[in-house]
Length: 405
Image (cartoon, rainbow, N blue to C red; front, side, top):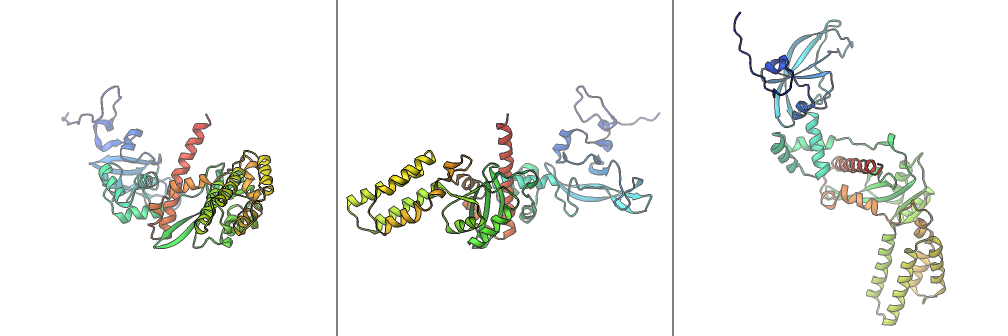
């Protein structure tokens, strides 16, 4: 019997039952999750087998199914080479098994769709890594390219990274969402190629996330009404909170939904009106004191703990009969008194938030100022916005699951 040189096992020998592929790399199949994850192949489907043959990565199907006639009766018919880019090991020349269908005679290839898109050489784990680097850290193209080179030995162009971000297709998970009926609405100013545009956004208070967004060139009341009407079709409509823009008021009143103002924006507007009036008019100290008392009375109404208290404070304010002039008439009789219901809606229902802080917070997290001013095209802006929103939603789900225990 002739002697044969057999290579020693290249795995650890502790408490393991050895098989032929431990001694002969040509028959090595990556069966363990840890091994697959080392090469960015952990999510491939069971029918796709990854082998190493003669130092090259080889892919073939466990069961070859003809895509034309769906027959399982096929034989191997040679291989072809394809460059693929993997996590941790970078670019590799892989051999892909070809098959010939005995039933129809068609030649077909190993199905790699669980690993790589048909017209791409960048594997899905690499694409997912690029998307994560952007949505988690907000990394730019240069930083993403540097990280891929340093961490994964991957060398791809800035344009390839940009194309991956542009083609990301995160969508709202409507099927698993039941809207609460309590919403906040606002618009985010964004600059595209030097021109200001607006992202209209609808936020569900109970879901704690945006449920609808739309990029528009104008935030007039007609555009806002169309957006809200489409977004809330066949959904609960109890209340919508906004800041004080009259375009928002007109659209929501037309929608016939309970509308409430953000308390923070109301206080900000009241304070600005008093400050501007003081700056532009020569007033005596007594006049300033009287107007400051008026401002504090307005604040007391806004800070009331319940609706009855707010009504009592409103009545007291009316009975105090502050000196009537153009300024007090405008702030009292054209704002505070006629819009009293919109200012105190949150006191009627504890599900209604008193401010728009939640939607403001999501804007700051998802699209901060240094990002929203640098976009060149609409597709790039929306793709990046939705990627960042996806990360917000993932964290949101984790927090919900954590608090449910």
